[in-house]
Length: 350
Ligand code: TYM
Image (cartoon, rainbow, N blue to C red; front, top):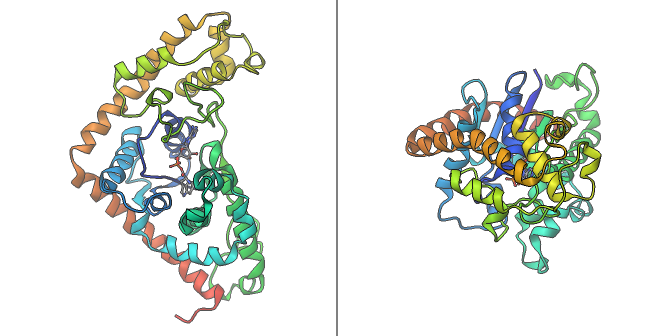
């Protein structure tokens, strides 16, 4: 079975972008894959060191995973800090990755802002830890939103350089390492990760500006639908969402140059699990005054039960912590297998 890995940061409220770009895909992938889903609490330190509500944040992402339908028994759900092997491999990857590669990361440039000298070293090394998250399990498939694409390309570069640099250490399989990528026996230890970004909403945009990503950090709460929003809030935000004055087109091509319309149609399609073309076949020629109420109904239908379940789960933090502890133990065992091989490949004494 292919191995799927993905992570979500415990910073701020989860929103519809996180759900459609990531969590909804996590749920669907469970059927045919072996999945590991991680609350990346170490990553949460990169932008801000002290978090008064760290535990609540970790539990609330976990609650969202469970409420969305992730099965922590068949798969693995845990928080990153319980598996120190992530940080250990990240250190090795810090020595594999080149400063020039990191300098190209657009998310670092955005998040560091103007005063780059004041950004944490962790923020700079963030993509290296992300590569370690995935490769410490030698996972091959990574469901994410479009904003993570560049980070996954970097993970491939890191894997490739490691494989090349330790080429002759890997080839003699005296290490007991099964060096295969897919069915091909090749002299690679780390697989090339494949991003899973497709779907109708790989990049959910702000409800107030169709050219800006929906994000936790947008000062306007009207710009996003939070997974904890109640029915009234969802309805109000969609009613107030920016649109243009035209009717919806009948074909996907007609959405070009209409970012707000494109975004709302993409959200509808993702929530309904169908392509945008099907949504337009139904609503083409209709005004937003018809489309928006339908979108509100659909959003409430999908999000309300999840919202209720999340609240229920949050009332029993002991249960959530037990899920994370159990997932952490299983993840640790797998990660340690990889790290023993990596330690041998590098040539550490153990
Ligand atoms: P994070 O916590 O910012 O976001 C979690 C997931 O939500 C997706 N996402 C979106 N998708 C569509 N439209 C949007 N507006 C939108 N906003 C966020 C993100 O792409 C992501 O999939 N670096 C990652 C966490 C991470 C990770 C990993 C992911 C750490 N290690 C290893 C995959 C594999 C992040 O900050 O996601």
